[in-house]
Length: 101
Image (cartoon, rainbow, N blue to C red; front, side, top):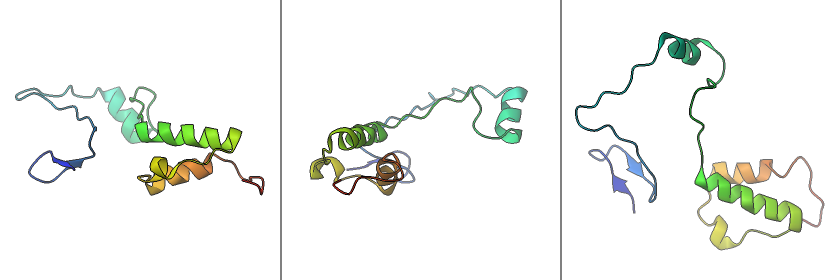
């Protein structure tokens, strides 16, 4: 199941990690340059932490196996895939696929 993080407002998938501030701890304020980069520049700033998805890693592994060897992901692997995971799988295959796949 899900764990309640704060008075029922947020729920995490099992295995999710949350970085929390300790009581009384204050996060570092962004510099003027960081604020400008986030607010006025296009895209995500180069200094921003790169997001990583364990789920996308397993989707990529399944896609590579399918694209290279024709191995269809098992129903156990795809059972909990979200729409975003299916989109990543399909988009990663390219514009066309042979009919035998």
